[in-house]
Length: 213
Length: 213
Image (cartoon, rainbow over all chains, first blue to last red; front, side, top):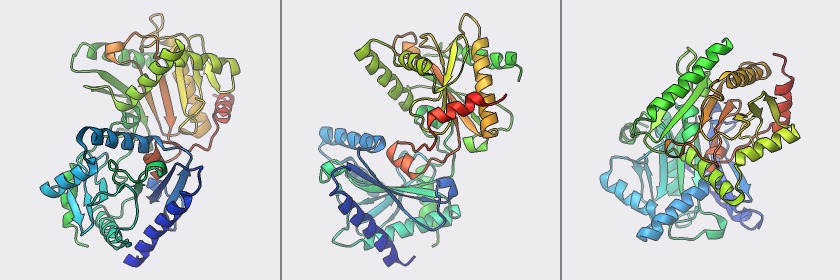
């Protein structure tokens, strides 16, 4: 896809979010993409999905509550702290441009789990300086790196953004989580909520950085 | 497997639990089985798995806390209430013998999700009247029904039992959860913690009851 087409996809996400916000039935809109059959994709044509929900989903609520707890005790956004620390050490940074950074998170649930975050605090998904060019650049770059390193793996990505009722806040920081599907979720993960991941994030980030694309 | 061999497997679970309890490093022991490659099985030979953990896992803690909340407000075990209600209505009952009942839970996460529970309150996994014959009977029966109805599907089952530090209590009720892997966990499930299930539990239970084995 040319980068402009990726920007159009991101604008479509944004306009759908802005429009659905007007409908008082909805508390949260989940946007995600399943790529490849193993990742649950049901159509061959490349597509994203959007589900508007009358409640804030469990996983989203847990993340928000934890971010809020951290903010209440430190008066700093946990994601801003993570970004500063990751950029300082550099070991888990995959790619960065002016506005965004892609990292292998410190405790990834699956091999090559990758997060893309705006460098400056933004609680709510939207264009930066009225443009999605920086986000399209990093999304495209990271997905190409994944394709190169893992031979076009199936993956899911999920947009994590604030709930409608509390869109602008100091404690939450929108981001995109990309999960290549290389391992299987089995009894241990189901039964515990914990994940077994054989790939250290420092190694995954190094492979990704060194991918020739 | 002859029923006696299934009883031996259950005794092995029990003896391993009893032995690991003596090791003060462990707070919880998770016992589960992954059957079939899609369900995460890595060995061809039929086997169960046991993982002893130094903390109570997230999923287990959530279930315990919720059961405790219910008990604190009603002074009744939530699982005892579910069992009584399910046996009374009958629609979601799959099979029962003297001591155990197998049901399709009211809000199953996946098609044909099946729970096996002791009919009388027992917080902690163990033999009933010093025998595992009733449990072996219902386990074998239900797994045969699943194999018949779904053509030997991949599945996970997980033993849900109390944590070592609070083994005997009034609020939790041990049980086994069986999850055939018919659908794929994709972006929506990852992002929300909610599950899309196209099969009503009443239909799944009916298919299971009518399976000729």
